[in-house]
Length: 361
Ligand code: SAH
Image (cartoon, rainbow, N blue to C red):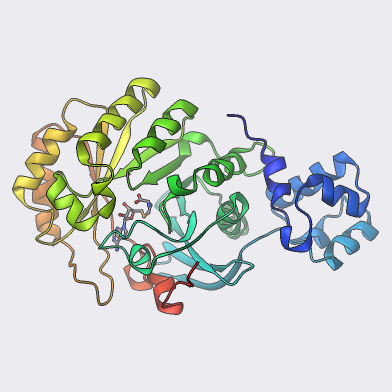
């Protein structure tokens, strides 16, 4: 499916101001088509702050747009927190209706920078170990609300001569539960007339919605797919991830096989290490058996403990022992570095501090 990023952006430019699409905006301000392209470029390629800064527009138009409240961002940073080592910056962003979502910037050594963005306010899937899941679902974000979290960090990095190299959909929400808006956000991120981020530098992480994995395979995009597996057996997985009752592991793995067959792309499996839950040697051997002989890669993730939660993270030496079993079985794995522990950087943790309960939908 072809998605026109400029149309998507103008569709969401300011519904609260009555501008529901490019035509409505053009009509209200008597704009020619090329003016729309100028505005889009100023916002998303030049990353200017707002219409007032677009010197290529006539002064009168700049003033009219500013006066009507047209903003280049649909999300408003309300808390920005930097980790003590300055490698992780977490943002809490307010949406026009008062809901908050989180996004995180991780600056690795060298040029690589990864922004982690949210696709929903809250989440409907209730994974037992996840703060967002425990707070419940509020609403879907629009393509632009998703994209604008990345745009915020793109501007922040640009001011320091840097740029975003990677985006992951690993913030709040389930991307495949808001499928169309997420694909629209991917189109915005990728647009060469805007941010211009390559599909291969984007990763969508899912709790494992089998029907949507099939749909995604049919898109034939170069976007990476990550599956939150977190357990190698139905008994353990269902205990921590309610979604497993709808899509058990055998169905999930069959969908992953179909995806690899269709796209010839690698699948990444996320596995958060929970003390005494999914970190036994037996789990490692079962996981190795599920992964064997396929185009799969396992990411072992140290658990970011959530306050008051019943779970503890597996100790580092036992994570490495678990990793060694997978390695001995020939499974490609990475042990993820824990970043931003001092700023509540894991999914939903900052919002849980500032906005204890999700609004009911
Ligand atoms: N709904 C999507 C994306 C959400 S979160 C999904 O399930 O993949 C991205 C990843 O962070 C998921 O693998 C999720 O299980 C994991 N996660 C959630 N809370 C965490 C925590 N406290 N510590 C470490 N990883 C966590």
